[in-house]
Length: 438
Image (tube, rainbow, N blue to C red):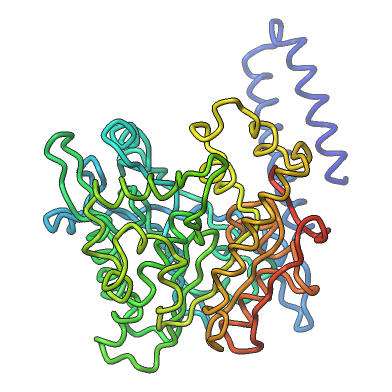
């Protein structure tokens, strides 16, 4: 009997039970239930048999099942309760948290530390609102989350990093892990820098201190955090005299530009200024920048990246959707709504709007000119309308591609020194491999 036959028989039996349930005797009903359970076990056996295949030595293994299980694994949360007394807490005072999927085999000595993203807040009202979500309280964080893309345990989806120790540090401070103050008026804790330091010290204590290879990553606000903390991350290993540890960083969608918006103002600069002031960020910004620029300017990656000593890879969409919607054409800068259609649908943009977006791309390309001169740095700027591409399976190890090389391959080649990667796409709409989100 095939699996399909069993399923069909199950359906027929269930239909008969529904029509006869009022007249069937208890012992007969029990017999039907037992039969159903037996058939369900048979179905499970058929599925397992279909999944298993025999290798050359005659041993049976479940290759397809293990790959699927790895790609869909849900990773449990761990709370840093011991760090509460040190002030490493979320905005509402709850403990910081992380998720760890341990490495295996050759990946036991390698670690990825991923800094979760999720925007920022710049005033009492918006920050208070975030405490009602996982971005402000660990009480509201998911107890298990999926690891995908660069965090995946599937060798098919993530060939270079699948067996590494993979960690996601949860984001609940709202200043890219860089603030350190307490607001008496609201009762909110802005302790991102302490969360960052305590989380890293904890990971070092449970095995990362002896790592051979480490990679700090993050997307969006987490991508900015990876840039801000890249050299700090490297210093943790230098101070422990682990000079043999390879330390690198990857910032995905973290290249936020100090750009002029459609009204001629600087919406993102104003927003960042509030964040830096409210959350006590200035003291934790890179000194190489703050020695000659104001703190708000030093929250923008374009003013930081040239001075980062640790090798770093910048992955960004030239037409970053978040920046289009919130920095270039926010509602305050567009009172008449002339950009409302364009910023949510690239096909609705007229010629002048596309010209404005092309100028933004040119500014992004210009901002990495000095950065790209370093042989140790990597770059992948594609001409897609997107935001965050390293943790989505379809974009991490699928399309888009530049010169026929996708993102996962580009990052892997850079990290392991297989090739120098300085890939900048041609302007929209030349790239047909993009996975646009607007």
